[in-house]
Length: 153
Image (cartoon, rainbow, N blue to C red; front, side, top):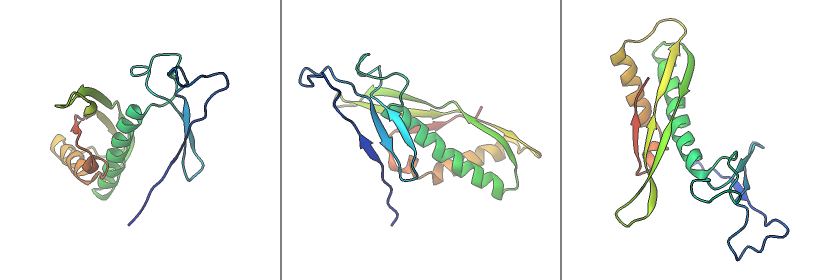
């Protein structure tokens, strides 16, 4: 079994009362390789100035995680099939909705990968098959209940 971890660090700022709910949601995600990512709640969820708009929010990270996982499997599948990828770009998007209990959740993530090839280009059917296989193999997508749609550009 493989385990993965991250450290999430938030510190109360001087002068914040905290109990009035008027405190910064800015925090840092720290990863084992040394990367540090400035994070915050989304300004769509917690209004400015208590959120930091330029920081990554958990919802964006969730979408990026699904997109990244799909891409990594797609690249591997394409390489094994003999296709050389020149660029892979995904304009992924997530949607919040209320579930049957009235709670917000990420109800849908749409991946919109646009792939350019350096050399032979697969036909539409072959490319669609590679995306299907990437989706099937992506363990992030296999770990969530959110509907993940793949709509290659």
